[in-house]
Image 1 (cartoon, one colour):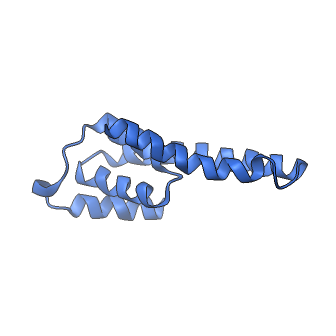
Image 2 (spheres, helix red, strand yellow):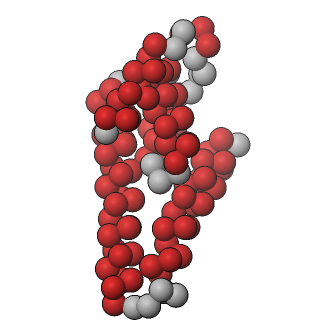
Length: 109
């Protein structure tokens, strides 16, 4: 959350004339979906700040995305304890960032 706020602050300091023109709703959807994708998650918080998305909306979207991702990882870990290494314990953490990236590409086009 602290890193999210730092990224948002960097975006807010970005000159308004260089800020991309994103509507607020797709930015919030991308914030949620980008949480498991390492570089994209930070880039989206900067974009949220640059587009002047309200900080409460940004934090809510990031918290929701983080909660979903943490839940998936927790369920995946629980499945791993009951199974062996070839089960969903290896596959799911790898598929979540790929799915986030794919959805980002789909929303972008």
